[in-house]
Length: 369
Image (cartoon, rainbow, N blue to C red):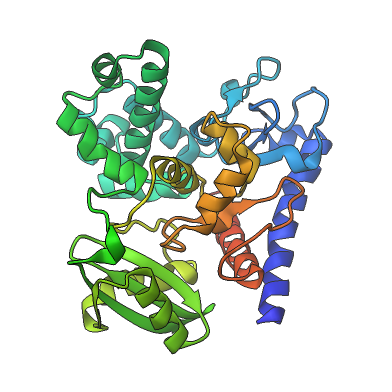
């Protein structure tokens, strides 16, 4: 596996090197192909921006201005990257779709009417939007409105007012959208999962062995390891009072999705979840799921995005206690110096995951061009 890790990490580094060279050269030929963002200032620019170049470890790359803004960055007032013509018609298509989503309330945006507004089939729009943004139009709409809701609450202190300002027609609509955005369900398992029935399966994968466990509500555990016995024991230790059974056939669908994800065939991994968490953990995991496929964030960036810049260690603990590896992509969080930091399932697996995601994202971007 070390040879695979070396190959994947070389591909990941080469991608970063190529984009960085365009930035430091202020290469105007790269304008309209990507934007770069500076973590310390939360500003994003076009590659040819005349501003002073930041330290490399503070730079992140995005395929469009909308993707940068989705991650919490704002446009540079010197180079005006939103005025750049992204020559790729698919980038322009996604930009128009995002603008339409942002100006509608949550009941009026469907894939069908969005496709009608843009003038293409809903299926084609969904596929292109995922490639460019890393998420679906529905996920973008949910994330946009949840983010707007949270901003309005902080500004006004009024939940009801913030809810309507964000475009939600009722409190039930708000809470119905929260699970998809935050990755949470109402169920929690106190006292070791007493009364819960948990089924699980274990299968070989590119990272060793993969365990997937679920209740009737959704996936409650995803684990990586090298021993069937050790993985099963770890699940029992996590839910000592639950009724646990191995049921391979029942979990074929989530297992297939996870295996496809690991092989780079399914970048957008969405599974129903049934997991327990504190409010802080949910907030961290929400930010992890917002990291686009093929990109990374530092622990400090996550803390800042939450409005808790000093909570770096708490963010790291929340990543370490993530019960559903891959579904909540804690492997996309690294240190500010670009080293991997920690990973519950081993740094070699973390490196392989990052390498696969980076290479698939680069291929997709090249294919779109």
